Amino acid sequence: MTALADRRTVLLNKVPEVTVWFWVIKILCTSVGESFADYVNETLGFGLLNTTLLFAVLLAAALVLQFRARAYTPWIYWLTVVLVSVEGTLLTDNLTDGQGVPLWISSTGFAVLLAAVFSVWYARERTLSIHAINTPAREGWYWLTVLVTFALGTALGDWTLELTGWGPGISVLLPLSLGVVALTAWRFGADAVLTFWFAYVLTRPLGANIGDFLAMDRSEGGLGLGTLVPSLGFLAAILAVVVYLSISKVDHTRPIAHGQADAA
Image 1: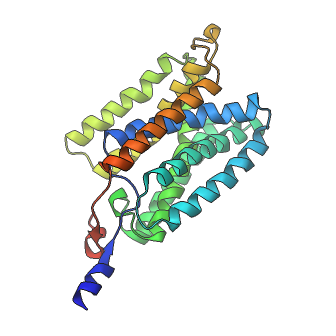
Image 2: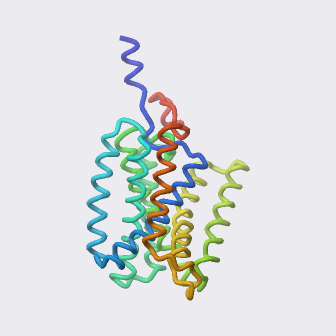
Image 3: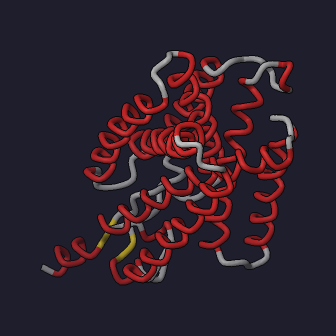
C-alpha cells in the first residue's frame, strides 16, 4: 500500500530540461515559424487567414497529443513548439498585415497580455518554473504563455526592424546580444525563471531574423534562398536533434514528488 501511495505522488514533468540543445532547437523552431508561414501564405497562395486557420487546426491536434502524453516525449513536444511558432507568427501577421494594426500597438498589447498570463498563472499555481509543469492546469498555462511569447517576439522583432531600418543580417545581433546578457545575468545569480522567459521571448526575433536573412533577396541584404529551402533545412535539423534527444534522453528531467513540485 505504501509503495502504491508513493507512486501516486510522483508526477512527470511535461517539458524538457533546459540544455544547450533546448536553445538550439528552439531557435530552429522559430526560424521555421517565420519561413514556413511565409511559404504557405505567400508562395503557395493560401492567404493569411486560411493559413492561420490551417495551422490552428494542426496545433490543436498536436496539443491533444501533448496533453494525452504521460510524460515529456521529444517528438510530440517539439512538433507542438513548431506549430505554436507558426501560429504565433501568423497571429501577429494578421494584426499587422490583415488589420493594419501598428507594430507598437501589437507589441504593447502582447506584452500586457503576457504579463497578465504570468500574473494569473502565478496566482493560481504559485510557480512559473518549467521544472514544475506536472499538472494539466500548469501545462495549459505553459502552452498559453509559449503562444503569447511567439506572438510578442514576432511583433517586437518586426517593430525593431521598422524603427532601425536594419537589414536582415545585422538585425540578428540585437536579440543575440540581449540573449548573452540574459545568460550572463543568470550565471551571476539572477532569477532563473525570469531570465529563462526573457531569453525565451528573445529567441523568437533571433530565429525569425535568421530565417529572413536566408530567405530575402540579395538586393535586400539576404542570401536569396527563398522560404522553402530554409524551411526544409530547419525541419531536417529539428528532426535530427529530436532523434538524438529521443535516443540519448539528455533533456529528460527526473520525476519529482508532488510535495517538491511547488518549490521547483
